[in-house]
Image 1: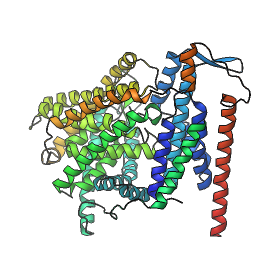
Image 2: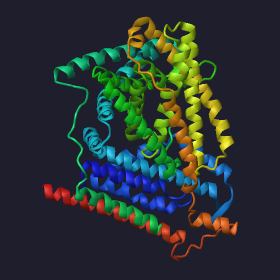
Image 3: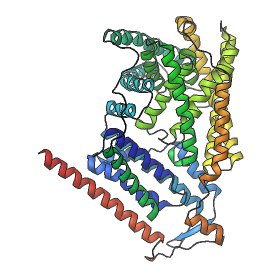
Image 4: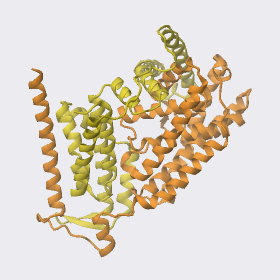
Length: 231
Length: 300
C-alpha cells in the first residue's frame, strides 16, 4: 500500500498516461479505464455516485468533440457495415479520456479526506501558502455557499420572473456577501491568532521519498506503460 | 473556459504546469516576504466567496440568459496580484478536484488562462492606470469593463493557442478563434459590469477595503516575460508532441483511403484490442473487489 503522497503521484502518472494516448486510439483509453474501475471496486464507492457525475460533461468538451465530427469527415474504418469517420473516432476518444480521467480524480477525492490530501501536497513540496489557502477555502466554501443560496432564494422569492434579478439588484447582494465575508475573516483571524497562528497551518517538513513509496509509484507507472505499449 | 485533460497534449500541459508553478512559487515568496498573517484568512474566505458568488446568477437584459461573477479582477483589486493569483489558483484546484471542472494536467493551462491574465496583465496594465487612485465612478466603470474584457479575451485566445498546439481538436485555428473571441467579448463585458457594480458597492460601504490595503507593485517586465516565455516554449516544443503518429494515423497518411476493420482475432486488430481492454477492466474490477474483501476479513 502506498502513502497519500505516492497515491497522488500515481494518479498524476495515470492522467499523463491517458493524455498521452493518440487521438484515434480508443481501445488504449478503454484499457486504462481499468484503473478507476479498480479504485471504485477496491474502495467500495457506489458506482452511481461517480457515473452520475461523469454524464454531466462540460459544454466546452462537447463542443470540441462536435468540432472534430464536423471537421474530420474522412472515413477511417468500417464497423458492422457502417462507415466511421476520423472525427467520430477522435471525438469519442476525447469523451472517453475525459470520463476516465475524471473517474480517477473523483475516486481519489471520495477515498482521501481533504486534510490528508493537503498534507500529502505539502509533503510533495507545494508552497505552504497555497496549502494553507486550500485548507481555509475548503473549510469556508460550504458555509458561504449556504449563505449565498439563502440570499439567492430570498431575492428570487421577491422577484417576478426576470424582474428583480437584474445586476443592479444583485450587485448589492454580492457586495453584502463580500462584506460579511471580510467580517468573518476578521473573526477567524482573531480566533486563529488566539491559538498561536503565525501565517501558515504548518505541517511536517517534507521528507525525501522512501524506497517503498518509489516502488509503489514505479510499479503502477510500469503497469500503465505496459497497457500503453500493448494497446 | 476551463480546459480539460482530454484536450491538452502532455507537452503543452507540462509547459503550462511549469509556468504556473513558477508563478505560484513567485507569488508565495512575495506573500511570505510581506509577512502579513492577518490577510491569510482573508484570502481563504475570499476564495470561498468567489465559489459562492458564482452560484448567484443575474439576468442579462435583452438576451434571455443569465450570468455570474467570475471574480478574477475583483480579487486582484481586493488582495493585490500575488495573493489574488494564489487565491484564484486554489479555487481552480478545488473546482478540478471536486466539481470536475478542468483536470489535473490542464490545471497549469487553466491557472494561466483564468488567473494569470486577469491578475498579472489586466489588473496592473489596464485596471490600475485607468481607475487611478481616487477611482471616480466613470473611471471605475471604464477600467472594470476594459480590464475584465482584456483579461477574458487574452485567456480565450490562450485556450485557442493551447488547443491548437495540442493537436487533439480538428477545429482550424482561425475558426476556433472567431468562435471564441466574440463570445468572450460579451462575457468580458458582463464580467466588467458585475465587477464595477460590486466595487461601487464596496466603495460606498467600506472604501478601506479597496484603498487601505497594501498592493505591491509588479515589475512590468515580469508578467510580460512569462507570457512571452509561454508562447515561445510551446511553439518550440510543440513539434515534438505529435512527432510519432500512432498506427492508425500512420496508415491513413500512407494509404490515403478507407481502412477496413478485419474483425477477426488477429493480433493488433481492433477486435482483439477491444476484447483485451474489456478483459482488463473486468480483471481490475475483480482484483479491487478481492482486495476489499480481504481487507474486510482482516479487520473482522
